Structure formats: structure tokens, C-alpha cells
Image (tube, rainbow, N blue to C red; front, side):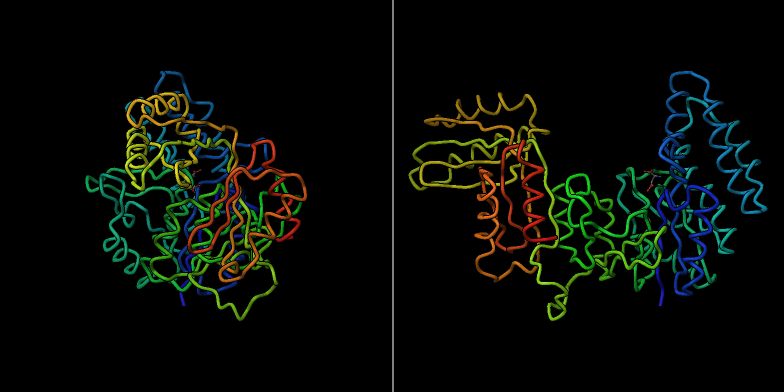
Length: 438
Ligand code: ASP
């Protein structure tokens, strides 16, 4: 059995956190591949190494000295090394990096050093082999990955060593240059490594005990989700739940590898297990909602015109939206009318251009706009084939005086989405949580 374990920045923020990581890794011999982020914040007033490195680069770009910031990076890393009693002469590598600092230094090269140094320290501390991402995370120039090459490199390493540490967040281009992923990219490295060695499990260790059923800033003490399918997770993430890096799910999902989100500070908690399919015999609770998420700031654009049974007007409107790079979240169609739910964030002031193009090209009877709309999704695989669920949800909201402005349900019945006024967003989430999830 092989488990790939990824530790986020807060799990490696100081020597004490390194100790927790070691206890976790050493308590299970199948945890043989460890992916590490750059040291994160030790406390709320502290800074992530990655942020400090970005800041160094910004200083260099504008010709402002960055010695003070670089000094803080050095201090953090040396402190971890010393407190753990390691022998890695990190000062030598930091000195040589410092001599290379100039405005021509690539941002990818500089910022990736956060993961590089943190992983070097972790590899020595665990007694594992350090496998640099420049030797195993192969990328194309467009940022896509080369799975066969990644797989060869990872398999060779675990064939040779009992334990391996790989830095997250960066890879190597065909030219040999370093290339960063987007923020939070170590999640992706973990997933790629797990897929590469066909791991039995990908554990993503962070500072929360799994995915919560609702945003804790809105619902007090929401329960964690013990099990969720990849499809449910996708719905929740799409509707705004901040869970994992979006691109980190596909490699493990496609390889059929379960993903377990765990808490480094509460290692006995089972966290959230994300799997392809859940045997519904094992319904733990009679809850039919797995999680609730939502987003604010949408507009509903209602176009009225006698459509004479054709799709022509709708097609033209969608083409206009395409040109403005706006994605319609939901569409409802009536006899002489259709309504589109559009995200204001991508539309911005372009809304007025969209409306005037619709008026010019489609000659509608009217175009109406309702703004300040929030979408809230109740997601749950157990809603499928159960009659009466939407009725219960709408009733609960109606009883609390919440006016539903639009409704959508996918044909897979995985999510019921309601559109409400922005001002009712938090309330809607709380009512759904209290009534059906808590
Ligand atoms: N250190 C990087 C960041 O802060 C990548 C990661 O943590 O996954 O975004």
C-alpha cells in the first residue's frame, strides 16, 4: 500500500509543526511520498514564505532593496533547521540565492525556493530522499503536465528509496526552467504524484478537520462532511466553497484514487473522505444534503419576445454573451420569454453593452434586469429519486419570508439552486443548514 501525503503551509510553519508531520508520517509506513508546501504563517501576524518571496520580487522589479525581507526568510528557515537540530547548511544555498537576486531573476525561480527549502529541511528531518520537482514534475510550456514522464520519475524514486519528499507548487519546463503553478498549487503536485504512483490514497493534510457542510463565517460550528463524492465536491466548489485547488482533483479522480482531507493539528480526526461513489447502504444519517454553498452578485436578464417555437433569439443572445466572455450560470425558458442568470463579476460594466447589443440584434419586446441576486446551492447525492425534497426546501425558505427569485435543479438531481436577494444570502444558508443539514 502507498499513500501520498501533502502538507500545506500551516503544517510546516515552524519546528513544532514539523514534529507533528513527522509523527503522522512515521505512524504509518505506507506514507512513503510526502509533498510539502512552503512554510506558512506561524500566527495570524506572521507571513507565508511564498508571500515574502513574491514581495522580494516586487522590490527587485522596482529597484527597491529587499534585504530586510530576505533576512526574514533566512531567519525563519535557519530557525527551523536549528530547532530541529538538522545539519543542512542552508546558509550556503541562501547566500548563493541572495547573490543572484536581481530584477532579471525569474519570479518562478525565486518564489519556488519557498517550497524547495522547506522540503529540503523536511527530507532530512524525516530521513527521506529529496526528489526535486525539477526532476519529476514535468510541464509543457502551456503549463500542462506530462503524466508519463512524471510517472517514470516518481516510480523510479519509490523503487529506490523507502521514503521520498517532493516540493509542491512548481515543475520544470522542457527548457529546464522552473515554472510555478497557480497559488495553492502544492495540492496539484500531491495529486500528480499520487496518480503517478497509483497510490491507494492521497491524504491532504491542512489545518481544518475536513470540509465543512457550510461556511463557518455564516453558520456557527457547521459539521464536517465525513464522506463526499467527487461530483458533489465539484458542485460545492463551483458554488463558492473554498476547499482544494480546483485542478488538484482531476488527477486523482481520473485515477480512481480516494482523497482524504485531514488536520495536522488533530491527527486522530478522520477528516473528509472524497470518493467516486458511495455505497448508499451506509447512509450514516438521514440527511439528504451533503453541503451548502453559494455566491453573491448575479444578475437575472429576462428577454421577452414572441419566439414562434425557435431558438434563434436565445442563440443570438448566447453568442453576444460569448463575445463578452460571460458564462450563463442558468437559463430558464418560457413561451415568449427566457431568463439568464449571469455573474456580475465577469460582466461588470459590460452589462450595458450586452443589453444594447441584444436590443439591436434581437429586437426583443423588452429586456429586464434584476440585480443583487445571490445563488445558494444545496448539494447532496441522496436527493436523487427522493420525492418532495425541493418542496421541503422552498417551504422552509417561504416560512421564513425569503422570496425565491429563481430556481434551478440539474438533471442529475445533485444540487438544488435557489436565487435570492443578496441581502438574504446568509439567512438562506442558515435556514437550509438548520432545517436540513445540522
Ligand atoms: N506556497 C504556495 C502558496 O502559498 C503553494 C501552496 O501552498 O500550495 O500558494
